[in-house]
Length: 143
Image (cartoon, rainbow, N blue to C red; front, side, top):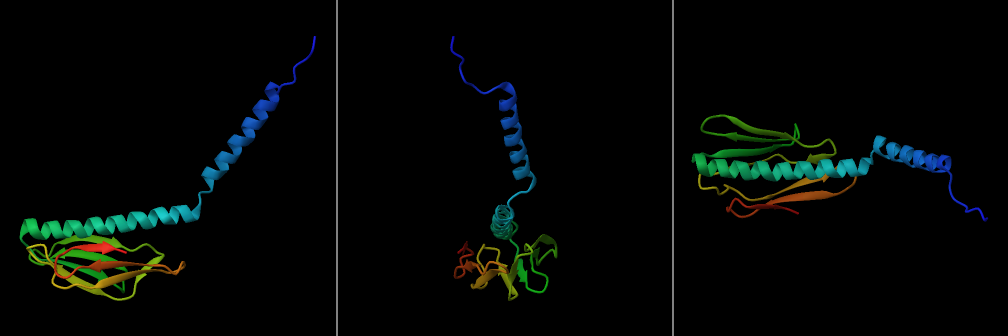
């Protein structure tokens, strides 16, 4: 009778234990670049959502909404002019900054009172993302 060569139960358990240990270490020490990328994506998604909400509120409430990107505090402030109510306050992530203060108004018809490009700069990766407002239409896009 010929013996078959195979892994023993102890060898199999040892390999599974090592694989489990490596997976736990990968989960314990997450990839910082991946986490930063996710945080950046969340911030710009929130930014777009807040700007869309501000435009919608200007139209539905028939009010003028002020949108201000504050360079000093690195924050987006959205407030109603008629009721002096603060609608949104959104801080930029630590690794992003704006270098100029930019303020515009969503008018009651949903259009903006001015158009321009606001650029967000990443402090460590030398990349920039531009928020471009179209001429008076109230539309914008991230580039």
